[in-house]
Amino acid sequence: MNFLGYVRPDGKVGIRNYLLVVSNGSGGGALASIIASHITGAKCFVPPTEFGREANDRKTLTRTVTGLAANPNVGAVLVVGVKPDSGYPELSYQALVEPILDQDKPTDTVFIDACGGFHAAIGEGIRKARILARKASRAVRESVDFGRLSVGVKCGYSDPSSGMAGNLVVGDLVDRLVDAGGTALFSETTEVIGAEHLVAKRFIDPVQRRKFLDAVAATEETAKSMGQDIRSINPVPANIEAGITTLEEKSLGAVSKGGTRPIMGCLDYAEIPQGPGAYFVDSWMATVTLFLGFAAAGTVLNIFQVGGGWFPPSDAMMPGHNIGIVAPTMYMTGNPHTYPKAENDMDFDASGLISRKESPAEVGLELCDHVVALASGMLTKVETLNIQDQLEVYMRGPVL
Amino acid sequence: MERSLLKRSKIVTKFISSRRAFTVARCCSKMRTRKTMKNLVVKSDKDNVGNALEDILAGDEVQWEKEGLKGRLTALDNIPFGFKVALKDIARGMEVFCYGEVVGHTSQPVRAGECVHVHNVVGKRGNADNAGGRQ
Image: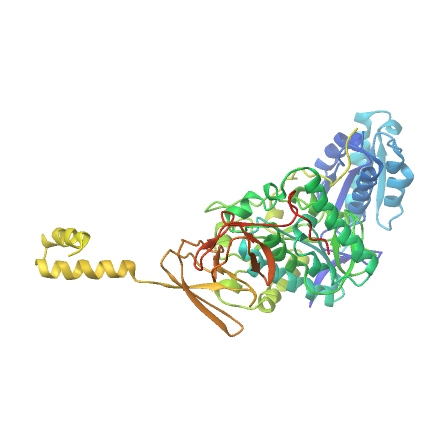
C-alpha cells in the first residue's frame, strides 16, 4: 500500500508542506503571528511563556518548538524573536535556534534587536518568509510505502462504543502501521489507570516498562494527594452521561487504541522517538495539548476517535480543528448514532462493528485506505477550516 | 373488562360496532406491551455485565452470546444504547467485571436486568479512600 508523500533529506516523509514561523520565546509572539498571517501556506507556533517556569518545563517548551520545526510536514522554518538568546539557558540560541538551523531544510531567522526594531523586523520577516515559502514549494510528492508514516492516536468524548468498536479499529490500524515499519504514538496516562497491566506487558525494555508503570502510579498518587476523589475528575461528565461508569472501565476501553504490538518506549511529552514502532507517551489527555505534543514528536497525522454519545443531536462541532498545527487531525467514531450527527467535521465511520457485525480487521483496512488518501493530500474535514485553536503545552511544574 | 380497554372501545364505538371496537382496542393494547427481543454485547465470559447494542425498555427481553455462551433475561430498567445491564444478581460490595477485568464494585445490591451505572457502582482506582492497584 503506497501514498504520495514529501520525502525529506533526513528520510522522514511528510504529508503536508508548510512554512513554519516559530518564536524562540513568548516575547517574539506578535512578530511571529504578523509575519505568518501574510504568507501563503504558513503555520505559526508561539510557545506559552517561559517566565517563572521551572527548568523541566522550560525544556519541554524548547522540545515542542524544535520538534515542530523538525516535523516532516514542515518544508521550511523561520525562527523569530526579540534577541537570538531569549534569556533562560534552555531557550538559548544553542539550545533552541541552532538545532532548527542545523536541519537539512530551508531555514532563516529574524530578531528585532538586529533589525533595529519591531516594525523593521516585520518587513524583514515577511521578506525572508516569502523566500522560504517559495523554497519549500519546490518539494514534490513521490510514491512511498504506507509504513513511512508516523501517526498519533487519541480517544475522546468516550462512550461504551469507544471500547466496543472505535478504539478496536484504531488499534487495528496501529498494528498494520507498525507491522509495515511505521510509528504510532498513543497516550493519556490517567486513562490507563485500571488497565495498565495490559499495556505494561507489551513493553520489550524493562527500564521503559518501569518508567511507564511509575508514570501511571505517579498520576494516581497525584489524584490522591490532592485529596480530591478522581471520580469527580475522570471519567468526565460526557463519559458518564453516555454510559461509562468508572475510570477502570474507561481505561480498558481506551487502551485497545494502542494496538497489540510490542511497545518500544515510554516517551515524555514532545520527545521524538529514536526508531519506528509503537510508543506510549506519558501525557495529560486534553485535546488542546496532546496532538501538539504528538506533532512535536514527529507525527504527520493525528487520529481522534470519539464516542460522541454526549454530542448534540445534529451538526456536532468537534473539539479541535487544527490542534496539531503542522499535523492535520482526522476524526472518526464507532458509534452508529454519532457519524450522522457530526458529518460536517467527521471523516470516518467505524460503526459497522456494531451495526453490521463487521470485524475490526475489515473496518481497519477501510481506515487504512482513508489514511492513505489523507496522506496523499486529501484534506481532513476539520482541516478545511482556517482557524488556529488556542493550544497548551503540557507542563507539570509550578509557576513562580 | 380492563378500564382502559373499555374506555378505548367506547371511543371507537362511535365509528364501528361495540364488539368490533373492543377487539381492535384489545389488539392495540397487546401490541404495545408485546415483549421485544433486544441485543447485548458481552465482551468476556468473565463479565457480569453486558452493553446494550440498542435502546432497551424495561420489560424487553434481552439476549447475548459470547463464544458459545448464550443468555437471556428481562430488563428491569430502561437501558440506553451503550449502557450496562447486570447479567446476574450481584450482591453489594462485589466486583463488577467488564472486558474480563474488574471495573469497580457495587455500592448496593444489583439484580439481573437492572441498569449498572454510577448509582450502584463505584470505581476502586485513584480514590482517596482506597489502596492503589499498582502492579
